[in-house]
Image 1 (tube, rainbow, N blue to C red):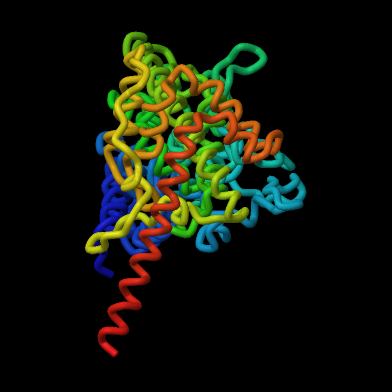
Image 2 (cartoon, rainbow, N blue to C red):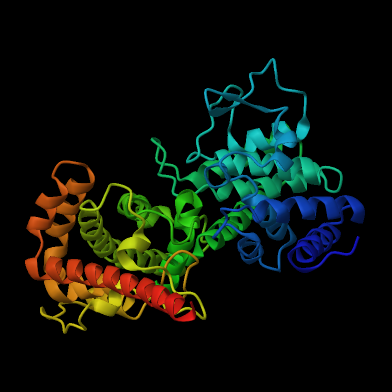
Length: 461
């Protein structure tokens, strides 16, 4: 079977890495594994966790990192709305579903399987454990599939190192009650695994295994420390439709659906501590590099939080206005459809004035966020334009100083604590009148477009 594109790239990664590790290569079986990986990564809701992501995370230098990256996102229950049919058979012997939650089978139900026991030991997961989407569920199940898939080709000690890399990609874990970081706890478990499975690693070799795991895990989240906050926001916009599937229905998702996706992301970033994004173990990475990564992450999160806050204020105004029409109004009704090549359709921004900034900018953060709103992120996304003309109009009108109080009122409206009209009464009358007038002009443009069709039809008749 001749493979092309991503599938060939995946197969090449499998073959070359296994050869470099002194393993046994069987092309026909590895072709099946490559097909399994790429088909899964092409799931309909995968926008960020795609095949391109696994190639970037793996790099091209270390074969263990390459292999770990190919498998590390294979299971993503929240994104795929379950476990892909093609990979579920590999997990059925070890995991069951109890009241819509995945649970590791009890000891009496589990088969005597060395690869499974190895992965469970590396993750510290015991029989009967309920798996959590935010507590390593996806990474654990992905590592089990990796171990079972690679078992015919590589020794257990090598597969253990691959599983350790995948374990390290469990994100955003706090320090344990005893003061150990997640990566220090992984090191402690690997010491025990080395003893129990008689791998014969020296202490120095075990440390290097952990350092490799840190390198891969940090590469997995490297966009948080992007030197360009626009790149960070591009990735944020790719993540949103993965867990907000309504956004994949371009031009038909509702105002409320879009708002809920923004709320989820803004809530996550408000919760996230920059210190929990990247990992460090025994000078991997060195202190200077690590400190820079954390500082850049803190800056990107600050930009994203302010940007998302203004987007939420904007969507709150549009949602409150939409309530005058109904409760489930498509966003395209209020703003116009996303413009497609070859089609000239009216959009809300056509009817908004190009306003000058009323209140002077007071910080570099405000300047950067205004540029991101006005000029746009680097990339268009399939479900949204890259710039934010309505948000730009609002922030130029009310200024950044008002955003915190305004956002609190918006959140009260979202939570149902105040009505849509009460929320609108808190806003600048000029802003509300201008936007509502713009929406009405958008409606008028549609009436005129329909009238032209009618007139053309009469002329032809």
